[in-house]
Amino acid sequence: MITLNENFLKLQKNYLFADIAQKVATYQQTHPEAPVIRMGIGDVTRPLAPAVIEALHRAVDEMGSAETFRGYGPEHGYEFLRRAIVENDFAPRGIQIDADEIFINDGAKSDTGNFGDILGTDNTLCVTDPIYPVYIDSNVMGGRAGEFKNGAWSRVTYCPCNAENDFVPALPENSADMIYLCYPNNPTGTTLSREELEKWVAYALAHGSLILYDAAYEAYITREGIPHSIYEIPGAEKCAVEFHSFSKTAGFTGLRCGYTVVPKTLTVKAADGTEVPLNGLWNRRQCTKFNGTAYVVQRAAAAIYTPEGKQQVRETIDYYMENARIMRNALEAAGLKVYGGVDAPYIWFKTPEGVGSWEFFERLLHEIHVVSTPGVGFGPAGEGYIRLTAFGTRENTIAAMERLSKLSK
Ligand SMILES: *Cc1c(COP(=O)(O)O)cnc(C)c1O
Image (cartoon, rainbow, N blue to C red; front, side, top):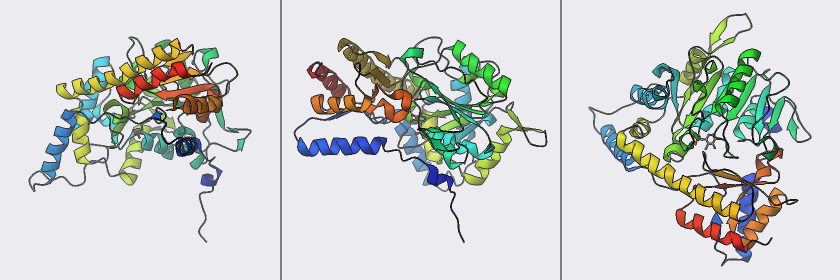
């Protein structure tokens, strides 16, 4: 008789965005005239860059002609895109990455979730708290998280990030095999300095751990000296894989494309003692379970790296970061303690003393009609914080911030 992967039954219900939607819907039913502004969900709003649209049109036309039609492509992505990535995202930073260490994907969520396929189910985990939920839930599905007791998974080490430690996670005291780091961070919008990232690489090398580094917001870094890639740290090519996405960089949340870096120097010791390169194993996994990202979408992604594309993508990022600046200033002027928003499109702020995340969420909704995300929804260390996104329109951002003065003290 057929049985289930019982690990799926262990998943904790994530009510966060459903709960928010429910609360907003209820409020709007009773207050249909309230001009609600949504600053909760992390999706972009600006259209794709003209260079991307042109590339899409050209690629679509190629598909309509027998001479230029493309069927199945390489599972790991077309050479033109892999090479553009190496030449633009890595070589200028002095990072030696080869095109065959780049795996084009249909977005970073898939690969951050799927990478566990090639790793043992007995590995222990380490995550920062608060956290993007995919890292934990994909490991629950893979049977790696243990049991859920008292609000935490038994085989997961949580490294709290809050105002007390200036959002710099402490290294785990025990041994952790798989370490998920996301910088610039969603949800806190904070970054790790080079020195801090060096500590994690040293830890991973000393303990034989693998760092799964999510660089989805790398393009939002504005300050000098903040690492854009973990491979800026010597030794990371022996202990880290890195996930990138064009979703937030270039508005590809609906188009779907990103890439994963698996250096050839990255090996894991098998049970029989042989050192197995993860690059080959991941390639084998992809060739079996994935048939590549659409050709037209890869052409669209490559257009981001043309001179016009780069400039247009930069303009959109600057637009969002100007929103972030406006938000930071307004929230600080309202007397709130604000984090993030400098190297990331997320603003994370402390609720007033003694007010919980959900309570302040309700006040923002009821008093000034702004939809936020309660920090506690991303993990216990997020209690007492609120996340706002800078992905809205300028008009809405300004309007929402002007309403802050109407918030009761
Ligand atoms: C948005 C986001 C991604 C990107 O996901 P895609 O599947 O590429 O759209 C990855 N990681 C984090 C933390 C994110 O917030």
